[in-house]
Image (cartoon, rainbow, N blue to C red; front, side):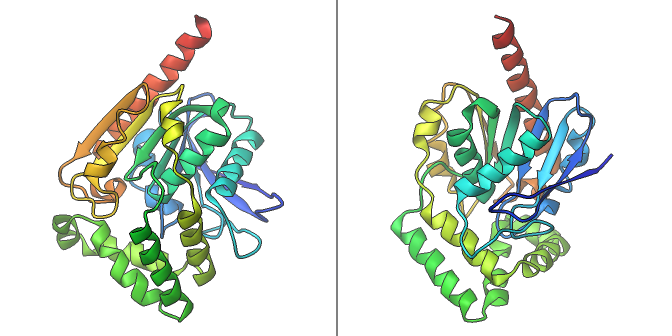
Amino acid sequence: METRIRISTSKFPQLTARQYGMENQPTIVLLHGFPADSNLWREVVPLLQDDFRILVSDLPGVGESSFSGDEVSVEALATGIAALLKEQKIEKAIIAGHSMGGYIAFAFAALFPEMVEGVSIIHSSAKADDEEKIKARRKSIELIRKGGKEAFINAMLPPLFAESFRNAHPEVIEQQRRQAMEIADATLIAFYNAMINRPERLDVLRSASFPVQWIIGAQDNLASPEKVLQQTSLANVNFVSVYPDSGHMAMLEDPQELAKDIRAFATYSTARQTEELSA
């Protein structure tokens, strides 16, 4: 069953999430990446909702959620997710973030470690942007400001998928393109600036009292498999999965495998939490 949750904060006039599953089950929060909305998880939610409480939010500025002003930070986005959880009286959750959602997951873990049962990082990184990446993002911002949103999205989206997948499923790329085009120019720019300004979060990994999961696409052109793999031994407990046929979008390229891995990680994390509480 799907339930809509809506809250309002000083920063976010409307923050909307969809809830699935039973309230007495362990909670998994799914944070979408850029440029997308909560519909990105459409293939994964049905595979998890029978055994977990699933919370899928439209990040502020997309879908049914909004933010006030022209600027936003990953910390503010994480605070909004925390407000959603608190409104639902959810004390702890598995925080799963894809790409930009991974940056928000790290910010959430830094700000609200007591609310974290585990962090699942899907095609993302704890490192900050390097100068080359910052330059590329600023170039994209200028393109969008000059009315080039469609050109930006048309160039950005296809390489997010492995070549074999995009050749076999052009309809999926087209659906993501249409959804991305619905996002306001100002929101795209605000998200890119939030990513540019985010700090490195390697310290979150080194001090993590919770397990960390890594989902890596061997054909990912955005979150370099080699660079991400260097981070996968920093936390005390790491789950690492490399998908040989996936690019940057495992939730669409390989949803069955992703759901299976998230399920295993969430089951371990919640059992570990229970053991610690009873020790």
